[in-house]
Length: 570
Image 1 (cartoon, rainbow, N blue to C red):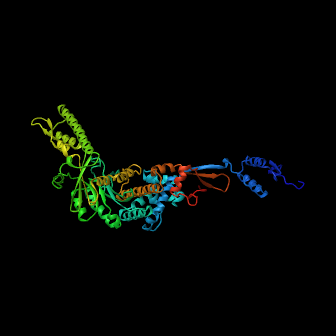
Image 2 (image 1 turned 90 degrees about the vertical axis):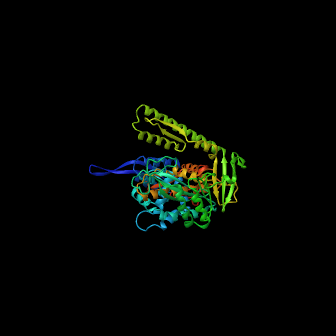
């Protein structure tokens, strides 16, 4: 009209069989509108409730020369919020170690998901949400792993999870563990100075693994109620895992040292094979010590034998502890060198007192249990001597008093009397405080040996981490193949976690990897869906505070400021 364009939103109606225009909204002139009035007209068009009409109006305004509209909160729908920071951190550490490439290079070709990516995803699952493998596929779909692991959620099923565990068997995983350890040494620039060796036992919930899982004594001394497996871990001075070995649950620790030693010599370089092996008394029989000496291995072990025993007779050469020099507060020590092996004998006041107190407490408990049994006999609840003897033997075994208490039955009736054998007084009078060590490192002094041995806390922490943080046991998968795969997945998960700890220490951070992963839980990704447009899903990260931003730099989570799988960066 008169050279100007006026706009309206109109439709048509048929009245008396003739089309008639029906104006829904009059807009007027659109050129040169101030921003408030322009936004008002946009709101009027949106109020009509037709998304396609809103898009056409925005396109018209763009043709006229107006900038695109600012998004409104009403245009967005928050679809999901995914955990992102811890998963990306562990996946990035796996990328540094090239875990996926290492496993896939030795995997069969064919259909199905990548074995390396499945193993890495399971190791991350063990670190962050340890639990049933049946819940793993659902956890994977809800996590941030599909955004950067290039493993589609549809490929991750319970069946593929069990297939992955079945393929992760020792003949394949042993070379992988050795190669991963070599990469750890190279990435973090250090040498293996010692190999700590220790074992733990884990009960199995399944019943189809009987040739591997056996009934045996648990680490706390009682016979386990379920079948169990023994797992031996090898750890260096920084807590990095060299590897693991599995044995039937009734295996004695001393019998596991020889195969572990063979593996160290066969699978690792000369530097690792020649590093001193440090084991506790569970492994160090005199036979094992002599075998290590014959193979010219370097070792430092705590020996189970007493210094005055006929196999050692160290006290004949060193005398009793009262004359020894004090090497630490409350600790006296002396050494003897025989055939290239240095034998160190120490006396520890604290150990002597602790062992004596514990033994006396156990003896008191055993006597109380025997008194209750005697009252039960008087009340007629025990019917025969065989039943009485069985109950007595059970009590003595439960409290470890077979050597210290003697129970004699009365000649008539079912009564009995309890006597001490005298061994307790002997132990508390001299044996309790002695500790014997053997080492090929003859240059170490008595105090150095004790200090070197006490640094075994690294492997003890490793086993605690496996059990608590990574949920290593009890094991609920059924077949031997799945059990072995389960243990490898957790060993790989621990290696990722320890690599994260080494990275923190390398960058001068004082926090632990557990604290770092907890802080990184703040880094989450939200999936925003723009309604009525062609934008689709937009993934945005939550804002990062100073600690999270610093950890993102420590672990190099972004490349040129861009995080994988999301829009925007730091």
